[in-house]
Image (tube, rainbow, N blue to C red; front, side, top):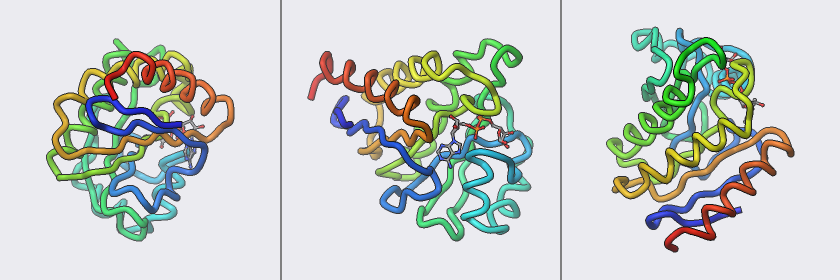
Length: 181
Ligand code: AR6
């Protein structure tokens, strides 16, 4: 599923965030310590190798909504952008903190001349954010920041489950209907 907003391709697919070789950057749903964890953080750190934790150590801890950038190490991507999402029901206001993740990640990507970036659904696993609510916040944020991006040309959402993919697909389709192509 693909659409365009302000000349930027917005797409979603089912898959593994650690297997996106055509993307210059991938985003990690990190923990505050930027250590290997479960879910996305586990997949990314396992594929990147121990050099990723080592590079990240001096940048930790990060706060909810914050994003930091590192190299991709053994991943096929040049960069990893690490975001700490809010824990649903605990880090407030969670919608603003989740929006900050996407805003800050895209700002870092643009500043680093990154043309393509793949995101997982931050906070929707261990951190408990309901997928539909999270997808609404995410896509509203993309719509808000897209016009200001100078280098980013492709934003991909990589969803693990079929149900999550269907929700993103529906929302991206509905953006496409109202958007400038
Ligand atoms: N590729 C794409 N999506 C995935 C993958 C994958 N390989 N694995 C899981 N997902 P989570 P969070 C989906 O828990 O909620 C970690 O342990 C998953 O189904 O990775 O931000 C960290 O160390 C869910 O929809 O991130 C942190 O402590 C989404 O990605 C904490 O969990 C996010 O799930 C972060 O929790």
